Image (cartoon, rainbow, N blue to C red; front, side, top):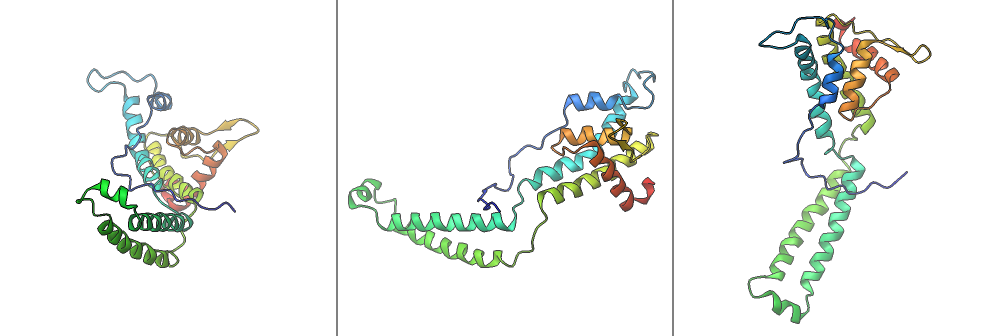
Length: 217
């Protein structure tokens, strides 16, 4: 089993959540049931509203997947604590043992010994955190978390598709190379948001979605 590495992901502040691609919107537009509908001079083609409604429901998954990137497993948190503790101890030792010649170059305001004392305090907190890590609950694996997101996204999107007359059919057959529009739409959205799954997997996701949302039956 590979050893977990310290990730130092930060909390996601200042990071942008990706938007849906124009290519996806164009592909989804083709699934609007009435392609011959007239274009409204003010609101445009109703297929554009269809795409907007579908993606409005899928946007939850985009946000969820984005923030999941900053989650850490217990092993990764332990690795970060161990790595940080090692680095802090090394810095503390170096600050306490600067050569006189280099220390004089820092000037009187630098206060390396004072900094060393503050780092010593921080080391105590990091050591305490290490003991708390062992009491943390075990988190779900990345694949399990993505599966949960896929099921919830399917529930939300399928409800919208149903309103537009697109059946939430869990139909997919590798031999006959046929998949329902519902499966194809979910697969397209998933591929655009780093939720890349095979068509047959999306078929199974729809089956799971119907179990938690009876109104999709």
